[in-house]
Length: 412
Image 1: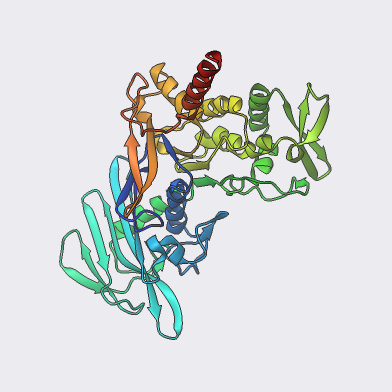
Image 2: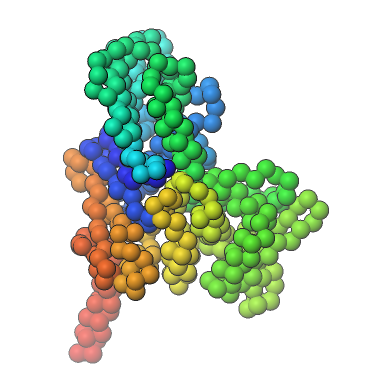
């Protein structure tokens, strides 16, 4: 199962239909508070709600999962925080050459003297030539859905949901369950890294259950690292290349620490007590180096360059580009780093990466429209189709200002 696109409507700052076509490397750039993080989190919101962890989940959309918190209540997800609001999520996926599409509209329903509830108002699902659509015209949990299968006659069924997919038993066609199971497998492979990332201040325990690295704060990265000798060697090699330090594991009984050794400083320190960038980037390195073995899914990373010196941004870019897994496991990066974008363009120009394996989205806000996407493509020469004025132009403008000042000073 591969994700080809995601669309949102009336979601957070995105008012109209907003669609993202996914490339093996998809880069989200834009000013602060433009909607980059909200869009990145939409992928996780969809995935976690397609494969909720408990059978007793009653909410269609999970507000918190895997360490990612999407909002306090459903209203936080709805554009303009409308208490009567609804939002829509849609995705196109491909499995064994056959395209599937899923679209869901969730409505917040207020009830007199009772807590509000979220209901799936409209749900459509297609796989190849098969298609099913379910609508609820009366906003009541006991009200049946009007169900149409592959354009046939409409029938009425009660449908119970597990997240955004039907829960057995139901009266829907068998192909729905078969495709839903594949979608759940894909959804379980989606990993998300927030920024800032953090580790426990206490010592790590070897016997701790090894949870997936997709834990949003990256807390699982040290445990995954110490359990895999090959991975540990690759991470040590990258740290030495990027920072000229050694990253070692010091074990005492059932506990271990991650130690940073620097020839320049002549002493060893705990990773958590070293420079902030060295600890912030560890979950990024572990995620990148395990991507090709992780199977179908998506890796979403907020600011992989966080707290790093600009000189290290190139090493992060090389790490990400070297470990792309193709369309089966795309990587979605939210970044403020010009170097990550420049290095991707360089790889394309040098023939190391197909130009259509990179998609760039510039996100901006417009009055009365909210967050708006502008897709920017890159050709075989590494040249971009367009670029908004003023973006990543600060260095150039500062150099011009310095030169003008120098000319003025020379004339005195």
